[in-house]
Image 1 (cartoon, rainbow, N blue to C red):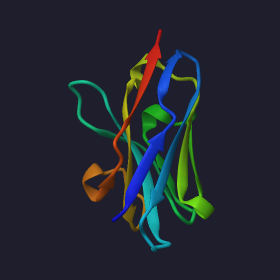
Image 2 (tube, rainbow, N blue to C red):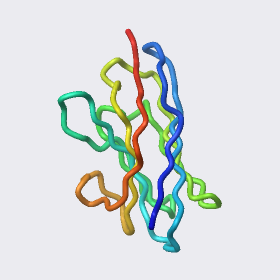
Image 3 (spheres, rainbow, N blue to C red):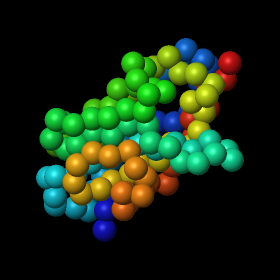
Length: 123
């Protein structure tokens, strides 16, 4: 069973930065994708960014391009989301997700999910 442990959420003022971590365990595949999704109150869950284990594939939502950077350390199967120049509209619960296979930001393509971590950006 794949397990995902997220960390790094918190509160920050607009323009600030946070780094989220997602540590994945319980699998043997070398062909996998880790993604970040977010969900604000009363809104649907949306894809933020994803990265393939080979590091050869990444994707970002238009709203975060140029501000967020995703990376992965294969040695410990941990993905990181560096979030810079945060805006109040980035406020949401951020979820880490895992799938075997190539990158996608379609939430229904992901089998395993983390518990979520709150990110709050104040103006």
